[in-house]
Length: 285
Image 1: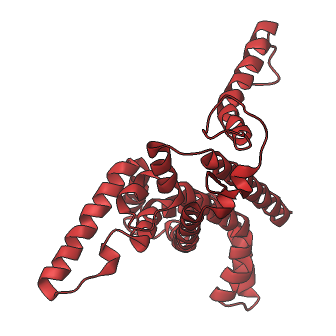
Image 2: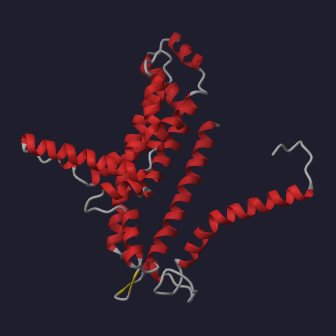
Image 3: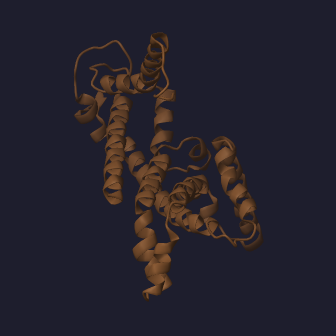
């Protein structure tokens, strides 16, 4: 909508109604989930039975809160570890990839750029199945040819890390590359003319300029890894991540402890997003 153009009252009313309905659709389920986390009921749904914090703190035979639920706590820790390594790998490789694709004399750039984008358009289910079949094939080959049992090729922690890294690194590359396009190359030339070497230029000038994008991309990579389900479902081993564990609980029937977990995740994600936004603006200033 162009603000300088005249608009009718009907148009303004429809526009405001659309905005309200849109954000209601987005946030109403999250709000209800947060409210039900404090519902004094054995079921994670309405009706409202009263206020309680038992689903956070209780440690009773008939009611166990999230802070005493060892299975859910273990799955949260596994998800945190996976997200940490995925964020580190994706941020490192994605940043290097952004530098690579900004090279003007880089051969086959368009072909490799298209291949880099492929994991984003492939459904997560297909990506997970493909990675599982590929790793099983390699594992079987190593076992039959050299009698080696390579843990990396079996469903488990590191295969989940590699599976998520395969598409999250692409997002990091796109975010950092978008920031890199705005970089003034004359700053590097000036630093080189003043006697700085290539490493010092990259460390003190280029990376400092890219730091808001790198930090933001790392935060996005961490959150995407933490909540990933489709790809992880086919690669996970005996150590289930939180999304897989929640899926199993919802499928088999659960208590409002899943609402308590959702509440903590919503609050934690919001705080992380606000912190990232604050420090990004501070870096730009």
